[in-house]
Length: 376
Image (tube, rainbow, N blue to C red; front, side):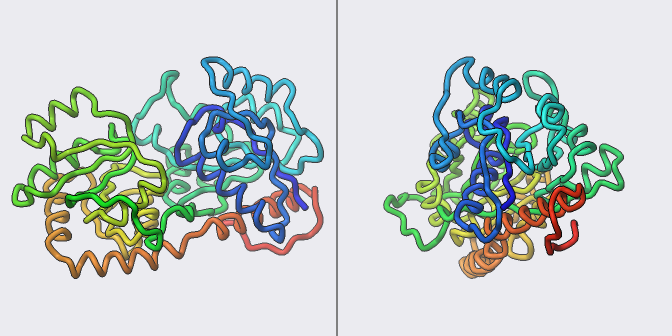
């Protein structure tokens, strides 16, 4: 049995989001399948992350929300981590350099999610929100990557042509399925967008493209999550005479699944994505999916999704119109998406991750021989 300690970075920094969901689903998969031979433990059991608090109670996770408490817990994890006993691997959940330095005596793993700050110039309060990512990629014993696109971008941008990564695709959770019948039905037709809208996510572009569909007066554009509309967005909506037709709401996973099932179309117009998990969630719920033709999205959508040139609002409007006006096309896309989504599972992700741990330990001479596949 290999004991893997997951550092608390993402669980103390992110309330909700794709990275924390990934680690929660991965840990759950290890807990549910002892045959994988991985014993997951948490370096610090305190968290502010909703997914961890809801799903990892068996590992003692408790809510430590507060103004300063999360940062205090991060410091304590460096000074005096809990549960430090018999670890084989430390898997880092984000890129603060102090964690890399502190646990250098262990076999260290890290996951490459995307190159968003480097490609889109998206910044956090303190500059690049991914901190010391390049240092992690250069110094960790094992680098997982959630897409070939992210790996290729890291090699190019950081000038790391020999970077070896272990590919572990993400997957939709069991919360997303067309078999889960909606309890609430919308009385209008709608196009769906999920998550943050700003910058490279291209929410404004989608609003502008939607305004071109003038013949569909009964169609609405529904934004889920991402916070309430900013003044600039409200001004855009008003200037395009879309008041009442462009809506923003919050939704939990059950409610979101219901929306995927009922939507005419799910659209992801991003200029860049490290993976694009909502696209798979939509496919799992038999929702037709339209994606920009960039970065990892063709990897995720395959032949089941339809695509438009990233940043081209006229082409986006054209593709939306084509899909919305063709029930046969939407039906075909929904069936194809369901097949595509089944190619991705957290069980498969966990298997490949466990395989990566074994390879890294074997390379370090820490463990005996383990049959495994070669790194990607």
